[in-house]
Amino acid sequence: MIKKVIIFLIIAAILIIGYFVFFADKKNGTTNDFETLFPLSDNYPSSPLRPLGDKININTEKGTVTTDNFLQNASNDANMNDYVLQSADNYLISYYRKTNWFSLILLAPPLRAARVTAENEFLRILNIRQTEACKLSVSVAVIRSADQLAGTRLAGKDYRLSFCPDGIPF
Image (cartoon, rainbow, N blue to C red):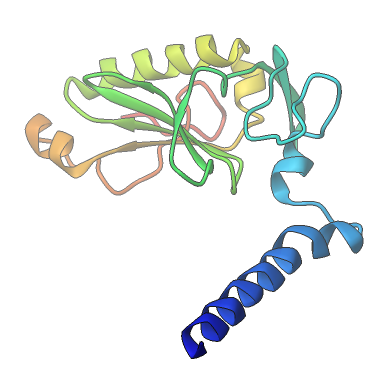
């Protein structure tokens, strides 16, 4: 009998905590960051894990950038926060939902060629021009193993997109 009471109390506690986690924010009029980034509309499901429309508007400090819906074909982690947009032998393109940040990670030499290819694929996946890409938060980095294979000292730095004013050549 005591076991049943304890199990009942545990289940009740989980339900109460779940209520506050999922419904308390809605009553206060706040929204989560995903709803801010991708507001619900007729093009979006009631549970916005991935927008269903063809386009996504990303609001940045430099203005709004309209992209193709790059999340439709992306793979993601269990929390729906980190998305891999494309993985190749010499680069990886990712999107981090919580920070609204894109990353292009260079994985293998030749690093200059990998950077050019990754940047071009990034533009193609989002279907945007270079000027629009420069409005987004994008980091370009070299992993240490690729740096060692290439015999360079490029790892540990954010190079940004090469065609943007803040891009750093290598």
